[in-house]
Image (spheres, rainbow over the protein chains, first blue to last red):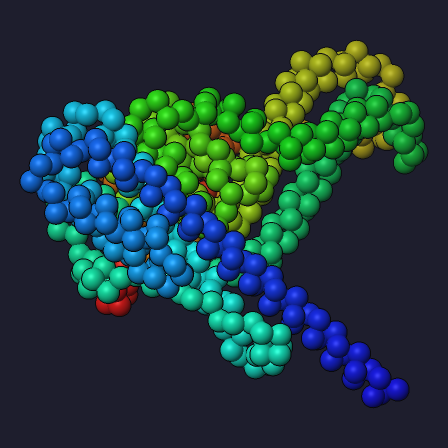
Length: 186
Length: 331
């Protein structure tokens, strides 16, 4: 009788732990889709913005080309790891572009450019926040997979740790100190 | 924050809402019973009640309907009472506010709240609704005019955390139910002066026993209750809301990962003196910073704390400074 109770208790725990892992994994997939939506939006926005500013920003050909190339690489990326690398390059390029746009006062008079600029700024922020949320979910999931006793279930049913969305090294190297006197673009 | 934390907070707020509704219904019933005694719908003879307490029944029905309505329609009522309107992306600034709300919803992993605006030059904001899927964030035009993107993120992050831990539901119920109590006790107060005492004069000849004196005593007690009830409702709102402001400030930093955002916003607000025009006693506790007093005479000390819906701005700023100090070392 006692033996039976132990068997039932173990079976109940296995079912619970398995379902919990499935829920966490679905959470990771969902969080990735949230980023994906924003990344796609950025891909759609960039050609429009480049088209709108290239007349004004003749001396920034290098940055403009860099952004277009990074976008192309991200679109053509064969797997998640190379996609993340390309998107990080694109993030750096867009950040540079948005910063350079501040040097061209005539852009401020163009309603279309202003609208696109706001849209791209909020998309960049949404990517950053979605990445933050994604990494939090991945941390929960990976912890679950690697810690005892749920790691027994994870190993037997083939749960693999999820990949973090790490930022590009050059982006991390930039010190987070803002010395601008005017309104900073957070 | 893990999902289980939110579930625990939701359960806690659900209990609080249930207690709130129970207190409200009992209060309404008691006030109705007092009216019944004054109107002589029921009379006390030899320690026994005679007659049908029609007003009590009526008050209880109203209380239940009002609780139900404030749960499902509370957000609209609150928005109506502060004259808020939906925020349209008609100017670049308005577009930016809508965008920042989207951004912070992603950071908090919540559905996007509906944006509202109220025409008031004083910078302030509040969130309301019965749960995250039926939530709104309302900002003043003053906030839009004075804040840059970073500061807005801090403010909206603060409101988003009230939404995440279901504070908005409790706060909304308090706002609407406390408003109802204020209305009822106001009505009762007038009625007792103009109706109640007149009737006692008319019925003065038929006074026969000490029982009706007991009735008069109960009526007096109800009369006092009618006076005290709104104050009681107000105290409840204060006690519930004060601690949560610190919590929401901390969560805002967790969402933005940037203590400077909210710090700069609060410092900016601390500089302005104009109190909010639409900030009434019933809705004061909903707002991000206390709308009823100017930031300059923001009190400290026990009594100032007891009678305020918000912790002093100075203390909130000091706590954020401490966070900024520890974050600056790591990032």
